[in-house]
Image 1 (tube, helix red, strand yellow):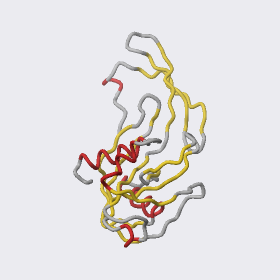
Image 2 (tube, one colour):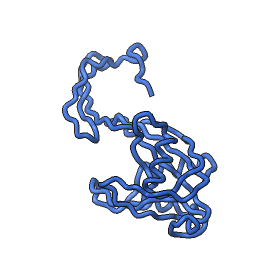
Image 3 (cartoon, one colour):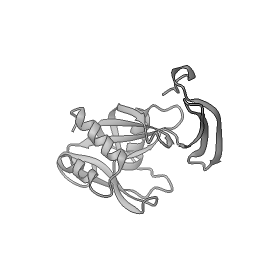
Image 4 (cartoon, helix red, strand yellow):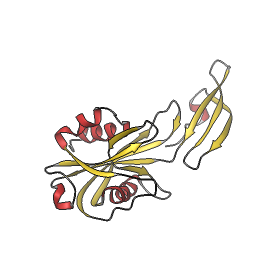
Length: 193
């Protein structure tokens, strides 16, 4: 997504200041001239794009996954930021040169151990636009075979499956996760669930 040209709005950026870099994200502020002439600092954190994968399997056991019947592949992981154990759709960072679909296929195999025959982007959008510079894509995967899980050194994920008919209810129960709810709602809206 491109930044609009200055002629398309009345919000002139006087300066953009990076205050810190963590290796995971960059943080800082933009000093912005408001349409009425005053100036204000708008703080931001910039993260690389990420992808969330919605994968529905017809027979989890045939792919070495827990569960039975038409189910959504999910992962359960502890999120130190909120100090909660969460059920989530598989997700990860889009690496340089990857499309959302390519990153989704890679993350699905790394986290869940599924190789998808087909992955396509459902939607991409900006997240938490009041404070983040972060784009997210939601991808749909189908046609699975067994692959090899390869977790990052800081990933401690348990693969779970959730029956399609109860996946959204589970996602909406505490602790709820924005990316999981978004992915399931978009897949449902497109008639995929």
